[in-house]
Length: 197
Image 1: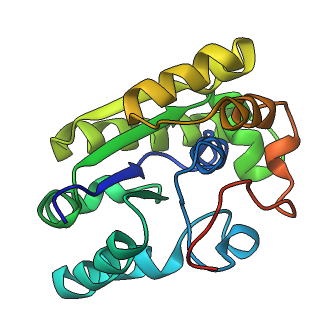
Image 2 (image 1 turned 180 degrees about the vertical axis):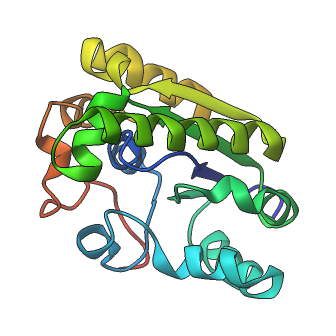
């Protein structure tokens, strides 16, 4: 489907990927199918599994989403490892990455902070950056801290890069979603009208 578009969050886990997925949902971009919000931290397991299996499986899942939505996306930290497959099959893809400071990420990964844990996180983050570079994907980078400092400007940048024609209430909902702690609650479904549920 030539007119369809897709958005993929490709980077390191625990760096704000869930927040970014939630913002996109609130701007009207379906990021998961079914009930994957609660069980998989907004990771669409059907499309992630298909991406890992092969071209045929991935093409089937992509076509399902193309039929339902003119623009859609998914979050998969490490998706850059499948750059060739995504480039061949995804409709007009936009790739996003968001990063948080290594101390905060270490706390999210391990539940406590130590020099060894921070060093491990920094090594993993470096591997992620190098992987994205080697993938050749045209990735747009975001800083988690920018979202916290100026949520309105952050959402405007997401809207601009992703070309999401959001309504005012969607923009405000996305800005409010950035409030610390709000996006940690998996119980509230996003305010996007869904055709697949």
